[in-house]
Length: 237
Ligand SMILES: *[C@@H]1O[C@H](CO)[C@@H](O)[C@H](O)[C@H]1NC(C)=O
Ligand SMILES: *[C@@H]1O[C@H](CO)[C@@H](O)[C@H](O)[C@H]1NC(C)=O
Image (tube, rainbow, N blue to C red; front, side):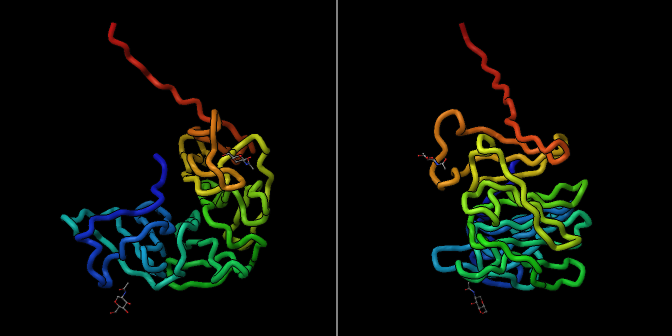
C-alpha cells in the first residue's frame, strides 16, 4: 500500500553503466503517474547521481529488460521528495538546493517539453532531508508533512503547481509524531494522505504507543487521525 522509499533492483539489470537503466541507489526521489514510475537521483557508496528515469508500467517486459526510459539529468541528491501534477504533465522536486546554505527549494520538470526549470519560491529550511510529498489527485495540491518552513518540522506545506507557491498549515502537536524520514502515500479510497514510520521532530526514534501507527490527513476536513487497524488472531485450543 505504501510507496517504496528506495529501489534495490537486480544487480544484473543495474551493473551496466548504459543509458537505458539507472545505477542502483538508495534514497532516489520517486513519483507515480497512471502509467509511469519516475525516479530521480539517489546515492550509492560513492556519490549521489543526477540520473532521471521513467519506468513504463503499461507495457510488459521480459526478464531484466524493464521498460526504462532515460530523461535529462536532474539533481544529484538523495532522500528527497518528488510529486506529479494532477494533469500528469509536470513533476516537482523539493530539497533541490545545492548545499545546506542554499535557499533554492524546488525544481520543476515539464513532462511534455522534457525540460527542467527552477521554482519561483524559496523556503528557509530548504535543505531538510526526509520529507515526503503526495499529490491529492482531485485538487492537484501537493502535501509535504514536516515542512520546509518551520525549524521544528511542525507544519504541513501545501504546494500549488498553478501558482508555483507554497502555503503552510500547523500540524497539531499531538498528531503525526513522525516528522521526518516517514513514508507517505495518497489513498484514493480514503481521500487522504497516509503516513507511516520515520523519526520525530528531533529526528529520534518514535517510542511507545506512537510508534507503528498509520496517520491519516484528510485535506477536505482538515482532520488528522490514526487508522484503526484490525488484527485478526486465531487460536488453537
Ligand atoms: C557512466 O558512463 C559515462 C560515459 O562513459 C561516464 O561519464 C559516467 O561517469 C559513468 N557513470 C558511472 C556512475 O560510472
Ligand atoms: C523524540 O523522541 C525521543 C525519544 O526517542 C525523545 O527523547 C524526544 O523528546 C522526542 N522529541 C520530540 C521533539 O518529540
